[in-house]
Image (cartoon, rainbow, N blue to C red; front, top):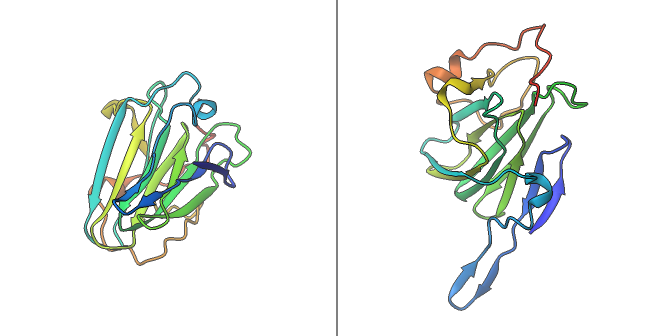
Length: 183
């Protein structure tokens, strides 16, 4: 695995090595030793999978407030997605900036999104499937979100939006007095 920095500190892109032979292929998605500098004392404690059927669908922008904040490791097992992280961390030099990467089954890349950043994605191919590794449990009372189309963020979505959950449509705009999330 090769860990690559992005324009937002702590948001990292991982190039995953693929080993192939006549039988097929093998790739390692996670190794605690490889990610120890990012994890510190945290551990992967939850693994989730999502399947999104319709291209253009947006899921996000989600996060959890401390003490339930989480780092996410996201990879695409099937199809293609436009995966987005938004920095919401108090005092961060990249506060309210976003970074996006195309993740696909073909490029075998993974995006690591640290605590204090919101996450969302847009599906580019039908029946796209994501695999998430989380460093904290999902806690309904700690969930938060920001509107995917907040003009303060100016996220560029590659396709017209075709589908959103009611919850994702109803997230508020970022208020002028929002200073960030203390991590």
